[in-house]
Image 1: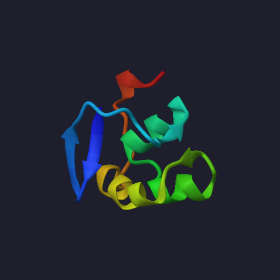
Image 2: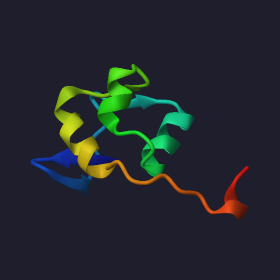
Image 3: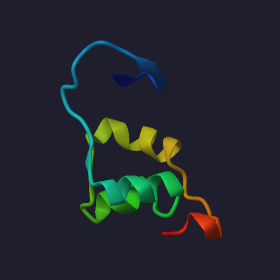
Length: 73
């Protein structure tokens, strides 16, 4: 399991005490940089414990969402 501790990510064996809740569409939008985690938290499409908010912002920065034409569906 991926765990955040003191600003660093590491693999751990402990089960999650709390975690993220988001749909597949929301995950894709985060990965593509289409929305920031803060925007999705405010819209209620992402649920995360408050200590994770800053880490999510660093992991999923806002970028120019671009998809190559052949990859469009």
